[in-house]
Image (cartoon, rainbow, N blue to C red; front, top):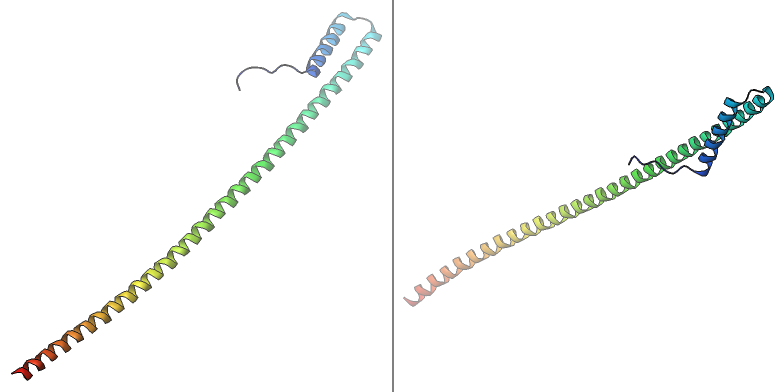
Amino acid sequence: MSGEQSEPTTEQTNTEETMKQVFDAITTTQEPENLNTLVEAMGKLFEEVKQRADEDVAAARAAQQHAEIEQGRAEERAVAALQAKEDEARRHAEELRRLEKAYDDRAEALTAASAAHQARAERAEAEADRLRGELAAVRS
């Protein structure tokens, strides 16, 4: 807190003023009937102060409950957002695995095609060598 006190409300000021008047009256009054009136006034004042205190407590409890509800909602939103992020990360991971598999399959197919092409090239080279040999035999 900043150390500053808030301005008293009109209700607080009225209660304080009434309490001062009752205290002054008690300290200066000697007659029993006036004392009874003062005791009754003190009782009423006490009930008023008690009622205000009860209202303040009820308001504080309501504010606390509201804060707890809001905190619960914020936690629920945070959990939902985290779950959404986890779901998104899971989808991305699955997509990456799918792409990796497709890449691996494609690389495997290219390797097989390259090996087949190499084998055809070697056979073609062997056939060319054979034909050159036959041609050389025919020319001689």
